[in-house]
Length: 389
Ligand code: NI
Image (tube, rainbow, N blue to C red):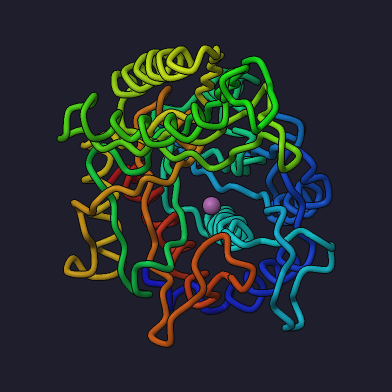
């Protein structure tokens, strides 16, 4: 089917998307969002399961006799960003907005669920997975730990993200790394504080912090294989309160991005060594807390090729980049892909006049993509679970 075949659904999908955009909810607090999704699913004749990972919703559609099953996942959460847009469907919740287009993801999966529930055209089981807390809090991990794959057995799982960096009508899916791992670190420096005019009487943790910011860049440049992408970014530095005191403590925080657990291990160990040694030069100590948040999003090569084929059928093969450069951003769909084969694709939503980037206060999902994304899901289901001839 083509996106045009879903034209009758477009007014409804657009209304859902605008309702969700106007009522954004963030990590594990998507209560009204989950209620809205469940109501729609019931109206399609499906029986939603609520409460997985607190605010997750899953509905199952089984047709025919095949015992094969797949999952389609949309994230449903918004961000803590005050919206800068003034259009009618702008956020009504102060300080929160759908700045990553998860409102569109939800509307597209609802559209696909409605179409498949009424039109069928496949043999097997589809689980529609509405996942909370993609941003920062790892709702994908929570759903897996809460038994997503036990309660809803499936052989493969698929994800999609709207991608304003690709033109509308294009798409991309990589056979392997697609998004990076997301780790955070905190380095607490401690020493003897002293009078700023008598630095030799204490341990200058701020000088150590400055050297440490520079020294940490030897991790990507010297301590990790140059062919392994890695980012080490110090994003916060806290220390000192006044003009004439060298403080006794300082804290650096930041994030690390990579595409393999081996690189994450290498960074953690190098960071610990460099932090301790740099602190020691100044008579101070360093305590490193390194926390792994999301693993890398790694597509199964066979599933990525399958998704590229489905996208090609929808958009034209020349519109699908089957070997895009991966992105150092992170995505908690990684937790689902760590357990099941599957693939995560980028659906182009960029406009010729240019659209705001993701996580920007002026962002708005491109509604023209609603029937495209929904048709992608429908075609994927029918291709993955074909009816018997
Ligand atoms: Ni997102």
